[in-house]
Amino acid sequence: MEKTFIYTLVLVSFLIQGVVEGNIGVNYGTVADNLPPPSQVARFLLDNTIINRVKLYDTNQEILKAFAHMGIEITVAVPNNLIPHLASLKFSQQWVKTNIVPHVPATNIVRILVGNEVISTTDHSIASRLVLALQTLHVALVGEDLDRRIKVSTPHSLGILSSSSPPSSGRFKQENVALIKQLLGFLQATGSPFMINPYPFFGYSGDTLDYAMFRPNSGVFDEMSDHKYTNMLDAQLDATYSAMKQLGFEDVELVIAETGWPSKGDPGQAHVDTESASEFNGKLIKHVMSGLGTPLMPNKTFETYIFALFNENLKPGPTSERNFGLFKPDMTPVYHVDIFRHNGGSTSPTNWNPDRGVPVRSPVPKTNGGKTWCIPKTGASEKILQANIDYVCGLGLDCQPILEGGRCFYPNSVHAHAAYAMNAYYQATGRHEYDCDFRGTGFITPSNPSYGRCKY
Image (tube, rainbow, N blue to C red; front, top):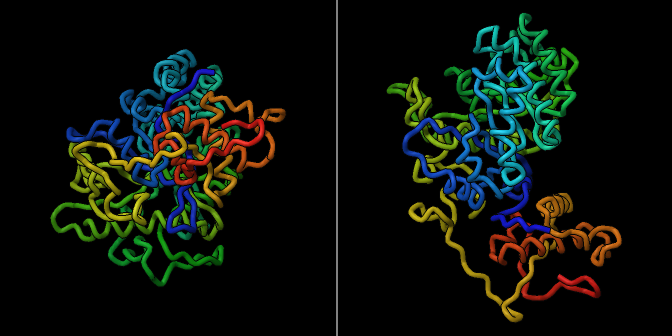
């Protein structure tokens, strides 16, 4: 089989402080004239951060190519003004052929967002065609056999709610109920998420700052549900969930498409500084990945996209709009937040050289005639190892030996099968140290793990 040469592997959940898993993404906006090349950005995110998914606001071809063979989940978007055109199947088919097909499966595109905050920010003529556009785009994906890989959705502001306090009273605005019910029906049928943009930053006042910032506070009691809320984000999520439940769609997954806190504001704007941004985003990541969920959605982690990757110096509006970024154009952090994979979340990534744009790696000592092998670490979770297997075999590498009847099928265990698959990838890509990373589950050994008829 043709071997696909790639730089990294599997999409897996990262561990924060060794105890929690989650899916942390970032919004990659490009309204700036000073940003680094997309290839440098993609490599930096992969090698140095816990960010395992990226959301774009368009289908920038250079960016999509830069994330090829990275494994990072990519969400792309269609601008609001194309929604009426997407209602045409012919247009949707051509859009998919032009913007999506050339990049898959090399680039791990998993979702297409049709517009942004359409229902609350555009005129009725566009919003009324939203669901038809989603349906037609889905049909176009079916035609390319991409519908199981790529889901279609659209993000919303909290402006779609008529009531949000207390959270259990959450309801959609009456004039939008019929449209949102149609939308939720589509999302439920296709296994796509309902995506919202909750921003405690835009909802806090001087009296509710601690509540917005996940700080200790007296909380807000919801008498209708008998639950106490200790942070604003949970209240915003549960208000949306209550509105969905009222329409009978509480089983549709809820995803945080945007949230964040700016590090700089206009003169005199209180609590808009690097300290506040660091505190909010740091606590946000820990909270959504904690597995605690919310009072109405307990024991959940939430797929969450932080706004934004970079400060964008050409964005219009107040100063804060240009200063939501986690990073400066030279890839150094704007402030400390626990998003780095090295040194327990230090303020800068290990061995990152902004001038070179690539991490400096130490060579792996070669023994046994210079050959080494890649095997799973002892204690690696079976869930992650199975993801490794699925990804490697999905690339087209020869996994026949670990299928039933194959020479490496026994012992029939996830760990044994992962050892074969991970090593197959490691050997095919040149036996670099990073080719056995597998997000921390791989281990390089100078001892040949072959046994019997099973040759590595």
